[in-house]
Amino acid sequence: MEIYFKDEQIATKNLSPGLKVYGEKLIVENQIVDEEEVEVEYRLWNPYRSKLAGALLNGLANLNLANDYKILYLGASTGTTVSHISDIVYNGLIYAIEFSPITMRKLTRLADNRDNIAPILADANKPKSYMNLVEKVDFLYCDVAQPNQSELFMDNINLFLKKKANGLITIKSRSIDVSKNPKKVFKEEEKKLLENGFKILEKIKLEPYEKDHLALLVEKIF
Ligand SMILES: C[S@@+](CC[C@H](N)C(=O)[O-])C[C@H]1O[C@@H](n2cnc3c(N)ncnc32)[C@H](O)[C@@H]1O
Image (cartoon, rainbow, N blue to C red; front, top):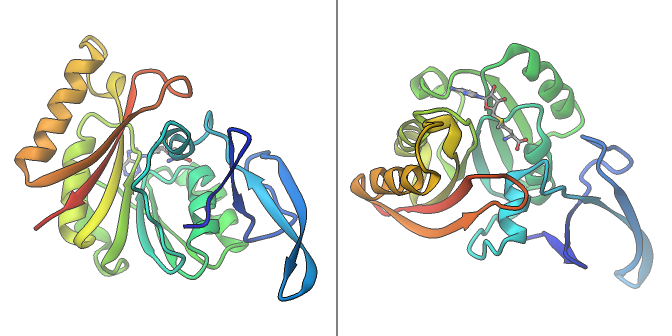
């Protein structure tokens, strides 16, 4: 998986060199490739802007995104995290689901510069509405910050994720129940996943980047 760690920072190789997506820093290095010196451009991946970067810097160890993976991404927003996944799966495709038309405009502009992003304006609660657009995928990412996010994560997994493949959900305690202790909320969400036959591979807290957030990496075992 092509993610670069250096001096407690994380970066991906820029699929559209020269272009920034959300004001991130670009770093150019000279490297020898096939006995020739070439310039390679990296984009720093900001963990305060992307929960996946936060999870990786906090030790997420079993994420494995091959460069040709097909990915279903729920809650794409303007594409901050989508853009870094797009750098990683440069031979693959990301089906990026977002239900806000205003946010979708920026996501569409991102997809204009990257052939491996397919933006889809749709409600992740209604996965059957995009069944004709999305194929079976190798990885499913869910970051919708909604009270029923575990349920919609599982519904989408059941329809689109290949068997034995993995998915990652970020859980924002306050989106589920602002009055409950986050630990209790996390336990309840984990229980739902376990009761529905998912195996939890890793649990990563997202502090200091995000308060009261947990990332769960799960495997579809059925
Ligand atoms: C926390 S933001 C996502 C940030 C993004 N994943 C990133 O890291 O760049 C949550 C996004 O999910 C979208 N969203 C919430 N509920 C949704 C639903 N049911 N279907 C599709 N998108 C949804 C919101 O409009 C918002 O853009």
